[in-house]
Image (cartoon, rainbow, N blue to C red; front, side, top):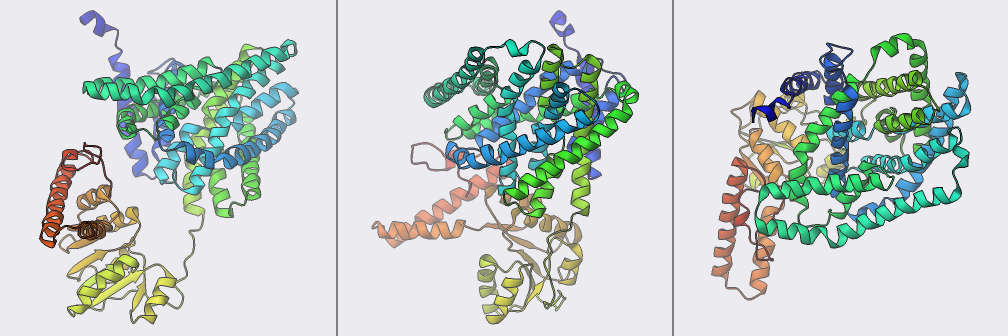
Length: 586
């Protein structure tokens, strides 16, 4: 055992984990984001910082598995029908951005005096955006599922697909590359398509039966091992077929997106994904060769600025051509202006065939890494300088403390119903909302609604939150509702807070944020419909009342278990139509 343990480099592991644990919270607290924290930590402990590691590229190769697993998780969220609906963005928007960027970025190398082939390879490498950075940024901003986020994901998918013809281009441009026959190229394409077809068939006919057998064995560690096997096996299979490992993992996720084991797979892979992705950013920071930067700083500075600006122009032009708004186009160019991890693969291939030399490869790698380091800074500048979407408060009364017993935040379909029993009992209400249309309409029905954003502490004070007998959060934005609850808990912890929640997970978040009574927006109406159905099916009223009461009690017990554990706790309290417990997010 001692001999085996000697092979584990514990100091290196402790150093990597320690650097991440220290740097990332500090950078996030400073508003700089986790990615920049990882990059800075990597630079600090790498060969060009404290010198605690001498071979960052070896770590980078292992850490690239984090990108692979990230794309698997994204694939799990993309059902085949949803992916098919994105085909226009993938092959239209994505292809247009790649081709225009290739044309513009190749001009930088030509302007600096390089021959056509190296200039084309250098510019093309910068076209390939960092999937890891962009996806992490989208996740942190909560935009992955939004339409603008999905368009960015479509472009990233096309870029992952593009690595195959781009590697073929490098082979063709290499000295003697013209000797490769058409038959060889056709064979390479056929092998790639065959690998995709085989993976689709395996996913369709083998994966669910295999997971059913493993689930029947009731060995949790085997299910985790199987999840990792699926991800890494699909990645390896696609690599063998000449495609990217990330694309293989993504396809595996898509194929399993309709599986009944999807949630289990996501839970098993997620911890590995997070750790390895953090390790990837650490390794990128370590790989920044400061000696190369010092020797070629003028060339690197000119190249980073020129490539970044031209890529931004290409992204903006394509975005506007495909009917994106100015705001969305600017956000997209800020997110995607950097080079990516696949550039390292492309440059390594160019080095191996003699298109570029070792010094040029190191310089290009430094340019890519610097552009990746700059991305979080671009995001910070964008968020601080880009004007927020303006909602004019002109003509609407500002919030004021009129001594009402209850402050109601949000006057939508939920908040409107909440007001009725309170007004029926004679309680006074102060109501605030940010929707001018809703405020104007409310006047026609005899309501006075102030214009105010409940996520702002000054507005809460002005509306009388600190003097009310209760505060009700009735807005339909879960994230904003949680922020308001946290503000109220910190500023006036003795005031009872009642909140509308989106689902069970949101209810748990709200309770942890200090809400006294979160109410799921669809729970009571769903129970009411269930009771109506029971009556329609012939149940006596006494039996209906007792059944609904039992369901309510069982749901409360399940919620208490979830609050103490996780979302899967208490599944045995849920009745499923397949004869087993099922997960319900309602």
